[in-house]
Amino acid sequence: MKIGIFYRTDYINAATQVYENLKSHVEVVFFKDSSEKVFVENGIDVAISVGGDGTVLRALKKVRCPVIGIKAGRLGFFSGYLVNEIDRLIEDLRTWNFTEDRRWTLRIESEDNQYFAINDAVLQKDVDQKIADFVVSMKDGTFYYHADGIVVSTPTGSSAYSLALGGPIMLPNVEAFEITPIAPQFLATRSLVIPSSERINVNASDPVNLVVDGDIVERTKSICVRKCTKNIVLLRPKGYDFSTSIKEKIGYGKMFLKNGIE
Amino acid sequence: MKIGIFYRTDYINAATQVYENLKSHVEVVFFKDSSEKVFVENGIDVAISVGGDGTVLRALKKVRCPVIGIKAGRLGFFSGYLVNEIDRLIEDLRTWNFTEDRRWTLRIESEDNQYFAINDAVLQKDVDQKIADFVVSMKDGTFYYHADGIVVSTPTGSSAYSLALGGPIMLPNVEAFEITPIAPQFLATRSLVIPSSERINVNASDPVNLVVDGDIVERTKSICVRKCTKNIVLLRPKGYDFSTSIKEKIGYGKMFLKNGIE
Image: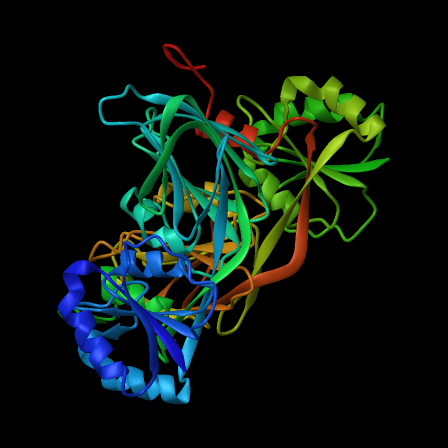
């Protein structure tokens, strides 16, 4: 089996430890800083990310194969193994004992460019810019917001920025987008849930930042967002599913004991 | 064409006016108080409801045919005509000039009974009862809430009780349930959005009220909720769709002018 490792630079020690452990069991084709601009067309069976959820996101966008997330500290939404669980990972790789967690993604078109997102596409004004008018239009209707920005997210992104803005938690296999305004005027704070078959146009009254999965990519007045044909695949240890990760990460829907949460 | 009229008793004057106007254009088979316990198997092409959204809900459950809602005052989520728009309604009936608004529904099983809901199924403690533990389980995971109750709603119900509890607005054609806890402990206030293909079990630590579309139907400790094979059909005037109704009713996503909402 051939693997590649992407790491976040401040996880270099943990990443080196992972590399040293793995190389006697599998062929490690590369060991790269995840901020490097590369795309690995083929040549590996699985990519391993050592870092946080952001590192996994970056790894997912650099490969066509499945990704396994390894994290120091606490588990993330995308990571399934802790740095000190390498023995378990080696055993799971040997027997290919994973849960395949397949997620659908977004395709975003601005006036001049095209992007691919796993979590979300955000149109957001600069801090020193005045509040903008946003028009969100689709086959099912048109909605207007006077706000700092608009987030269009996948179910995967529902536990990211949308959640921080008050949005619901969507299970990954829901076929719907979530649209959440950032700091809207006139109490229009609720999220809208829209079928994934829709094509969503967002138009701003002034040029604002387009932020794709957390990275500012350009300034624009309009984007069109729809479901992308590309799915991404995370490999997780058996038993660590989405419902477990939201309980672990944010304590949502956790078991309670007589005197509090377990 | 054969129609039947259901009215809310405090709308009797408006309803009589509707009846008097319609009877010279169509055959009015019945004129009934909507609180009457009846089911009209067949014999009418369309049922007309005169009252609020609750009257439309009740009418939808008493017939197999489409329903048209007429309202005094402001339009509701389910009504498309005002009492003073009878001439337009007569013309629309004559030319069958409607938008068909088809909604999917819930099937609810308690230990002993079975129900059908358009908006929601709610398990909710009495005011003088202590907070209960709720376990919500499905194929995709199990979630625990220490709360006053749990609401399982359709997209149609997302603009009803769920909205009042902080839930998102779902477009009617989204294939997902929404689960929203009522006054949960430990900050677990967010709604969960779940594919409509799921079968959702809700278990309470003590017997609580089961409320179906706003009516208390029994006390129970557990229910199973899934998508029902029955769709309901509302007829609305052309141009009055769901996005228009949420702008009219709650001002969400309304057009803004320079100095405020239009």
